Length: 140
Image 1 (spheres, rainbow, N blue to C red):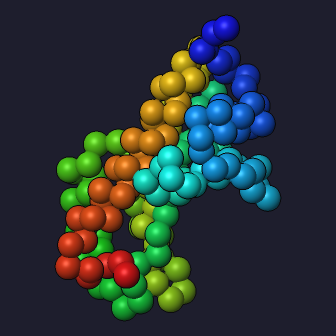
Image 2 (image 1 turned 45 degrees about the vertical axis):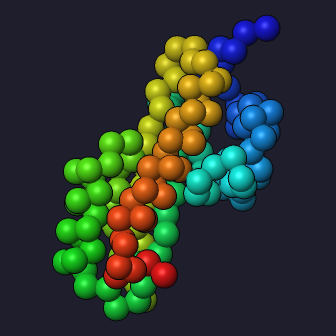
């Protein structure tokens, strides 16, 4: 039995890979795979991309009243110091939301273990970014 998956993998097959690795999973109303539970540091979503890419993403709302300039400096510092995710801010009505994203190319076959390890590292890197807010200026 091979550990390789092809670029035409379905979201259902991807879900099975993560369930076999002891992740709690759910396919949401948008058709994205949601990962949570003890096997991962922070909940994430995985979206199948039409360009043979898996898009990993997650987010957390910032406290209300956070200074936008300070939030941007904080986010830029995360992008400078934490390697895996791309951090960015989205402004909402009442507060800003910090998002993170990462793409995994699957143009050719890819090992299941790489996808699982990448998801764990992405979630861990996002958690590390949140931990940089040691004075709780941005997050509860």
